[in-house]
Image 1 (spheres, rainbow, N blue to C red):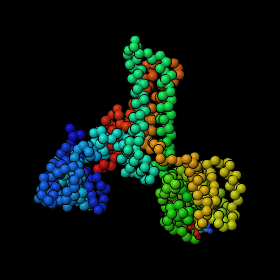
Image 2 (spheres, protein in one colour):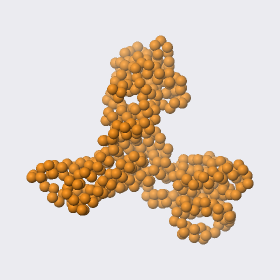
Image 3 (cartoon, rainbow, N blue to C red):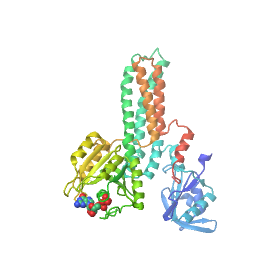
Image 4 (cartoon, rainbow, N blue to C red):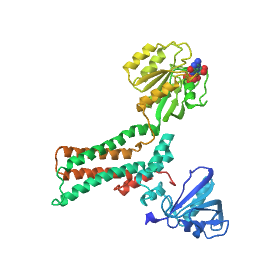
Length: 462
Ligand code: GDP
């Protein structure tokens, strides 16, 4: 019953903006809209065709609430597969709230977070992986995350999962029917045939699981900290990477006192760059705060870009910095390569040999020499140089990853049973488990509680 009710919510952000959209979905949405909306040109709003827009006013009884455009979309070709109305009103928090209140007063109930998308799922328009992609699109922080979520929304992951499940269910059916009717169907030697498919399924599942490491980095961006002594050229480097003058570049030591954060994409690799205050021993308290912050940020970083002014010799401060970042993935950027070189590169070479997580490259933030070499090193460090966004499916959702890992375990058990020459009915239990685990990804055989939990993470009005 609760499921069948007509729901409404503010679907745009709860902040003042140009327009605000109140969305209504359910059997009564057109009826409810016709009670609160008065079109400027007289017509029966209950009779208007699907995908039409109407200009008029929202009224609560005789009280005018706002001027708006009303969009009417009829089932089943809508977001939820139900009748949907979207009222485009002025985008003020008060006015949107008033319009929503009026709609609720006339028969709708407030939608729960993610309930529109949940209906799209429950009504069979999209599977669960596509529903989750909707949320991921909204929260995308970079181009990769967006592209990957869009692909998922188009059903790339669903198609792959459905294909794998088809293979599995085919084998389950063959084994079961042979066991039911041993006189007419023999499954002697079936294991050999099955083994070929299990191996290939395991490989496919393994590939998806492996993609999740890259997927996570790409989705969230590589947490990158730029460190180095004052005047090494950190701000200049950041400007080169960002491609615009955002950080303030100065000649006075220690002027970058707070940290700056930038999300940038380098040849498709998203970096969340944190620029820190110059690290050195300092008496200046304000600077000290910046320095501590730098140390703190370094701790949780995925990558350190250590900028060194190579026109000066390394000193005690450099030694301290190197000690601090010893265990991290580091690219040492020997900056100011356009000037006379004073840094002992042999010493660095020795350091690199000791620590495979360290790489160095000579650059000039001034002339941009060496910047492309730096990009190459970066790509190599995180993706062994081959990063292709085109065909692959990246797993970026932990729920999917865990389901895949469960499926992999079950498939491994089938494989082991075959190798151990176990009777065929042993295979089908594990095959069934693999089938079910994969099903969780697209939302099949997932309990109602879990479905509710997943949708409760969604934002309001989606
Ligand atoms: P930060 O304190 O590490 O952020 O250093 P800045 O980016 O503010 O740079 C300090 C000074 O070095 C500025 O005068 C820059 O113009 C200069 N500088 C930065 N990179 C280079 C470079 O590659 N070559 C030369 N010649 N000067 C540079």
